[in-house]
Amino acid sequence: MKTLYLECNMGAAGDMLMAALLELHDSPEYFLKRLNDVGIPNVTATAEAVVKCGIKGTHINIEVHEHHHEHHNHNDYHGIEHLMEHLKISDSVKKNVLEVYKIIAEAESHVHGVPVDKIHFHEVGEMDAVADITGVCMLMEELAPEVVLASPINVGSGQVRCAHGILPVPAPATSLILQGIPIYNDDIKSELCTPTGAALLKYFAKEFCKMPMLTVSKLGYGMGKKDFEKANCLRAYMGNTSDKSEEIIELACNLDDITPEAVAYAQQLLFKEGALDVYITSTVMKKGRPGLLFTCICNAESKDKMLSLIFEHTSTLGVREYVCHRHALQREQKEIQTKFGPVRIKTSSGYGTTKSKPEYEDIAKIAQEKGISIREVLEELGEWLEKGYF
Image (cartoon, rainbow, N blue to C red; front, side, top):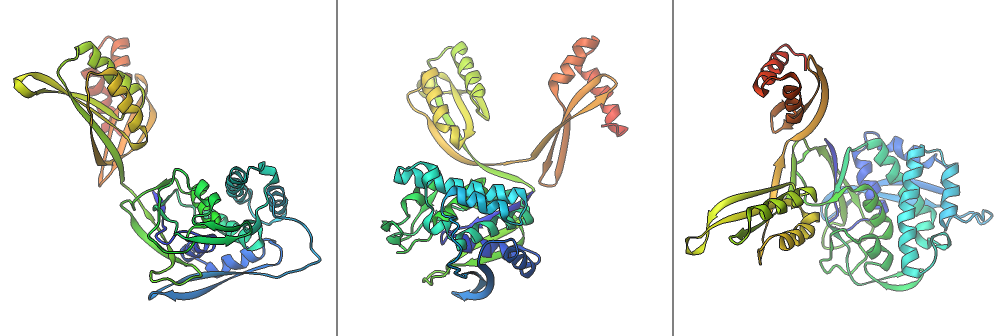
C-alpha cells in the first residue's frame, strides 16, 4: 500500500508541509510553476535549498505583492469559497481546501463564540496561507498516497503574538483542532504547530502513530523559518506497507464463580459490540479450584466499552490489560460462481504468503441444500481450484 508518513517532531506549518511534499514530487519546478499559475491573487511561490543542523532540505517562500486597488475580502469562509471558484485547480482540490478551512473556521467559532459564517481568518485568510493550503492539497492529489499517517505532534510552548493579542502556545484554535490527536512539547519556547498545519494534518492523516513497517522510496525535508538547537524540519516518507501491524489491547480476568450460561452470554455480547476476539481457557486457580481465564482482544478505541461490559456481565472484580502489536495479513473477499452456485472466497496475503479458502457458511448451505457432507463439497471445490476456475 502506497503510504505517506509525516514525522512532526518539530511541529507542522503549512509551508513546512508543502516543502516536504514538494521534495517527494517528480517535477518540483514544474509544480511550483503550476501553483503560481492557478490564480491566487498577487502571490509568487518559490523554493530554496537550506541547511539546518547539517540537514539539507527545502524552504518555501510565499511572496505577496500588495495591490491596494483590490478590495475583495478573502478573510472569511465565503470569501475563500469565492476565491476557490476562480482558481484553475481540480474540483477535488477545491473541496479539500474548503474542508481544511472549515476545520479552522469551526475551531475559531468555538474559541471566540462567533458563528462560523461570521469568522474572520486573520492570518490564515492571508494569501500566503491560502497558497500553503492550496499547494498542500494539490501535492496530496498528485502524490496520491493510499493512506496518510503522522507521528504525534510537537506543539512547542510559551506564548505567541497574533491578531487577537498574546496567546499561549499552542494557540486556542490550534489546541481545539488537535483534540483527539496525540501532542506533546519538549520545552522549545516557540509555536511549532500552527492552525494551518494542525488543520491540514487533521484532514489528511488517517492515524497518528509510530512509524509502521515501511519500505521507503522517497524522503522529503520541509524546513521551517526559525533556527533551534534541533533541526527545524518536517520529514515526509513515501513508501509501501505491504504488511499490516497495529496496536491492540488484550483484557483478561480469572473467573471461578460464574455459570457457563453467563460466561457464554458475556462472550457473545462482547463480539456483538466489536471485540476482535473473545476466548475462554480452562485453568486452575488458588486452592486448586477449577476456573476460567476470560480474554478479550480489542482495538484501543473500544477498550473502555469492553471493560464496562466485562465488569457488568461477569463476576470479576479486576481486569488485567496488556498492550500488544498484532501483525495481520491483508484480507479481501470476492464472490465466484461454481457449479453449486455463488461461493465467497476469502484471500489473505502478506509476509511472502497468500492463502485462500471458501466461506464456511456458503459451504454449509450448499451441503444442506444438496444433501451431501461438507467434505464432499470441499472436494468438489478443490477440483475447481486445481483447474484454475477460482
